[in-house]
Image (cartoon, rainbow, N blue to C red; front, top):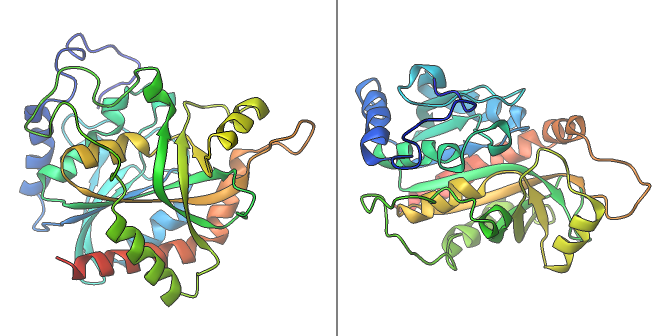
Length: 300
């Protein structure tokens, strides 16, 4: 295991090299017959969703993070901490159960390391979930927001998963992100929502990532709202940016677990509230993601 609190002397020069990633992917490929083209990243705080998807998977090959050479370990309470390769409704997938957070001390390149591992085992499309706070007044707790765009606040301060030497075996040094969240998949999400009678629940919006681990101040939330942000959270963008950079098609969604506090002297947000909302909406999220996998797979 890589300890996030220990500085790797070579991290600046060789943070996430192709050779290091290939060690991880080779280990997985050597120990599983599954060859998935679709990857799923389960958001922290969505343990019921994680369990539900894992329960749907048949013929699973399970890889605890600590068993994969060079892999970090999840430190979020409630996260399972493993990769699962199996068949989801007959479709080969890899499910990341538990993610790595920068506020726990992991560098951003390491939080996105599993995405590149997925790429080297053959994944072409990725679905990323998170628990987010709602800023759009039209949203309610329990809504599912499909990301159509994002604001990467850590990136404004040069905190980026691609900071450092460029390895063009994964992708180019400079690349566009105006089409990061695949429009075809977002259109599919509307059809899937309609088929599940979730028309009024599944929405689209702009997501902003902040550093955490504290929830945002009233002033910060007012600023984000003025910028057109619909949902805010502490994760997701390192994974989606890295996935887009290495040629994957990207779909992401936020479960709105709380409405952000934009006035003083009101009820505070807490992690227990996030967990509780995840439990209430778990089945809908599970069905939504499973149907998205089916619809995406049909296009291959």
